[in-house]
Length: 344
Ligand SMILES: *Cc1c(COP(=O)(O)O)cnc(C)c1O
Ligand code: SF4
Image (cartoon, rainbow, N blue to C red; front, side):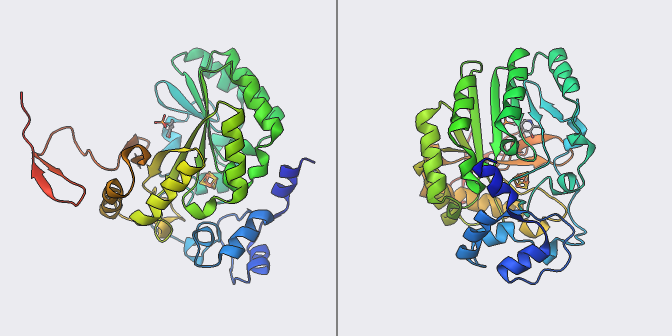
């Protein structure tokens, strides 16, 4: 077995495993647990106050939450062919797996993934037929689950098939670069390079929420990818209560992301997900934090702060607009209000 697959297999999978490794006292947790031991070691070293611990160690508060939704971003409203969500005209999400390299306790798909909803049932012929019938789809976004948990052989099969139906761009949304960086090995680089002439761009959007997640291995692997492939390297982060909910922590994070050669793309307002509501914060708090970023980091380092409207209505800027009508005032980065007059 390849090294990264061994790392993946050697994991803590139950509250008991976690209690034994971390000395915690977790009882039954309604949601699945999964932490590779190699990463568990990093969590342990970082300690109970760290962003790693808070994001990945289950909490008793997950159980029996009354607030929050099963499917907060409305995946099922736009589920088309099995494993495909087509919400925006020219691009679609492809969900090839329910498996992740770790289970993030705030996960927006935690219910669907735990109960392995129909959304994830494979019917690749159906997927390909849908793409043939919808030539307006130009980009396939591998999401999940985590697509980079698939073998290179499986990824190659998918990429071949998407190239054959004329897909122009490929994107992977993944937490693997942070959790199992060894997965992005020579063979993976070869695979990407093999397909780089078949697509206009191949993008890797790495999911990370705190600068503590960037280990020296992560840095080394990303640096190598940057040097040896022409992947477009972006990041996405979720604003999380008690993890990164202040502008200094976020400024730190975005600098750290830049330092390893990635460009911050999205900052997600946390979704209203059942089982993850203890990470939630209100929009006013999020906006105040985001506002302060403009004084702390340059504009080109500020990601889009977005919110997925519950019910499948898609992404919208979390700061602002609430309507196309203009109120007549603008606020500056210190929350001071200024009049502004439209000129015809
Ligand atoms: C977020 C998302 C995308 C990607 O949107 P971009 O604005 O291109 O990043 C595509 N499809 C669905 C269903 C999504 O939720
Ligand atoms: S990697 Fe993504 S899909 Fe998987 S548990 Fe974390 S947030 Fe959820």
